[in-house]
Image (tube, rainbow, N blue to C red; front, side):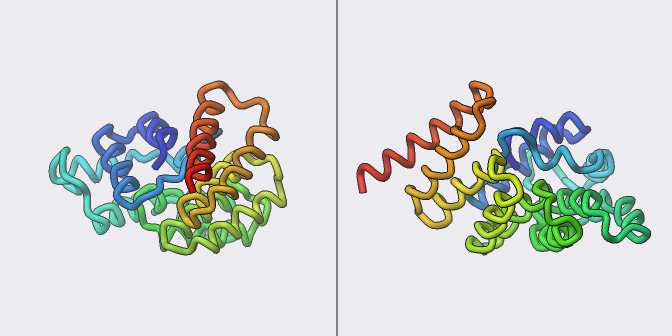
Length: 217
């Protein structure tokens, strides 16, 4: 869960302790893939059911990390109304993306991957779902699969900032490819002059890091 995802989740009713605990899980996992223009959690339905589950004991203490089983139950509960809608509209790419995002936000990456795959099968140009699919594949250890999805996303939108941002991150962290990461981020900056200063500074900082590593290798 990125910072943008955390802020989006809190704005939709997630309790701060919940949000930052889940963000902490991403840190434990390793690379928390980010988004420059949107947090994927913003495409999920309101998380009031998750907050209610927490208050009823799904999370036994504010400072205790919820287990993956607890988060799975929370996700299942939140996804129920969307799954009901899906029965009558099984090829609704946006709906499939929303369900995938619920499971991704609670770190059920296998389940999330399945829904994102169905979302891009229903609409190959759904880059929101494809970028999140790449994240889930990366978290599950399929680095090559993640890179393939991001490259596919860029065939539909060569300037997509989120795809380029994550492409750089996965090349760097998943392949130790500092040259490839630098190429992705330079392309991002060149093709997206509208980046606001904080986001531009974020990319430039990462770019400086990988360039520094290249010069010492």
